[in-house]
Amino acid sequence: MANGTTLKKGGFIAKLQQARDGAAKVIPKGTTLTLGGQQMTIDQVVAGFDVELTKVPVIATSRAQWQAAVAAVRNGLPAARELYLALKKWAELNFPKGDPRLAEFGFPIRTPKKPSSATRIVAKIKAAQTRAARHTMGSQQRLAITAPAQPKVVVFGPDGLPLGATPPAAPEAPPATSPVGASTEPAKG
Image (cartoon, rainbow, N blue to C red):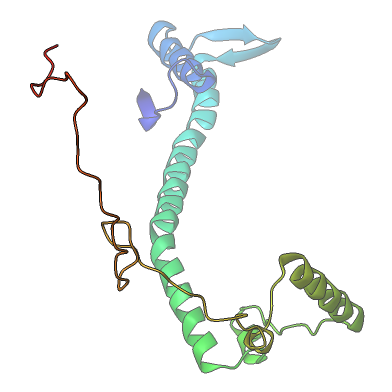
């Protein structure tokens, strides 16, 4: 396109450019046209298009410059964030909490609020109720609890008798006798 104009294909600016180029190429110089009820030469028509079309490159370059500036800011933000966080840490380490100099940096001054009397009373009641519900005890209360007596432990050996105990004496077994007429051979079966 002429005049360095490059915009979206098919847009109105592209149509203006094409109409300007067509009028300058097809209509002979010095021809007078009646457009919108007014008499105009072809040079006036072309000049009218040129006035508007010369504004487009300015917009395009301005837009490109703006986009470049936005991209530069976006690319620089992570590094700036790191610098900001480092300065914030430094300030928090070098100035006490609640120091008004922190506000000079734009950092919030955090001073812990003291709970009201009503809040402290409610918290104390809730803590007591929680302790009762969970059956929790303090260190002194746990020390007061003792075992009732020393438990007795009995360890059994593989023979089923307690270890360290003597096995009871086994009773004498009567001699084995076989009934009359019984065979001493094992039964086959």
